[in-house]
Picture 1: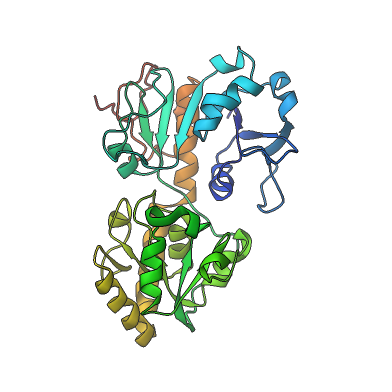
Picture 2: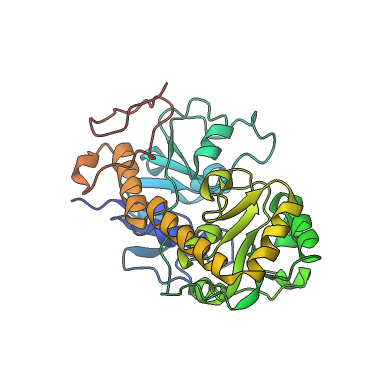
Length: 347
């Protein structure tokens, strides 16, 4: 099976690690001035041998088969600074990590190109964005744990995992977190967590083992994609409590894998119940892990991305082992040719 050469940027380290499980070679442009997106492999994540650093000045002389954009800056600025005109005509995919952050239903995506593919990470995001003429595909997250941590839950507290929560404010639920911790013992970890009285950052390779000792995982976020931190906690076997908004509404089943609601007082009651009843917390966490292993399977994720790369480069996905996931659907008719193994296009 031909391995493709994919140029992309380091925008979201955890996601990039999981993406690199797709059977291709990934090239990351590097600058030494600390510019966003140009950190390359870095020294936090244990990438495999298929992930390569390339000096940003050398990208123009690097042979690649596909360009994967992961931010608006990549698309509107970076490609014109580091790519040749010929490279900018290569097959292109835009990976959108977030729902629209202006108007939730009427925001037009800045990519408006029938010859590109716009990948959304949740069905909710695909529903909310106005993607215009650009064909879209949903590839739901795939996750694996960086160590073999499993839930123990002996710490009678909840844990919240969000980077830069204070500066990200209401959208990420800073006020919800503040209200909840007046009634429930909660610890916050993540970049700049100290600004809200939290514990600070825990490096991703250590996070699963660190959080596994807490009784439950609390997600106060109002409006964002289904966070990888939530899915990773489910993989550990933690019960999840969070707001019943965005894709969270489909990820957690009340009384089975945790609890979600739009009433904070109801969620606080459930938190107190889990602190009092560790057996229930363990049972919910076991169910959360089983569900996460099924829905967010890393091998399915790798197959879905392989299918997307082969679609835009006109290499048949039938060369890829395994069936295309039904969740990897194209929701607007693409201008590119559709192979027989591709899911049916929805107009």
